[in-house]
Length: 74
Image (tube, rainbow, N blue to C red; front, side, top):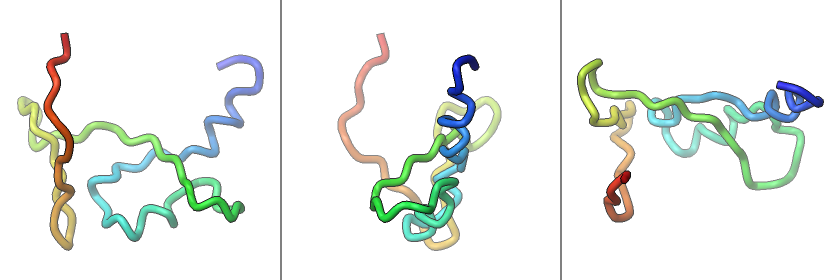
């Protein structure tokens, strides 16, 4: 990256959100020095197995539910 963007991006943590409960996510933010209730995270895609297109959304307390309508990716 060029032009000082490294610092801007480094304050956004990369976290596999589907491994954690929703109430844990705010504490995983790389930038926690603000009173702003919004937090941003990069989340890599995690699949059930190597050949699967299904996301692994299970956590210790349950699972992340899919919401919204399916759309074609054309």
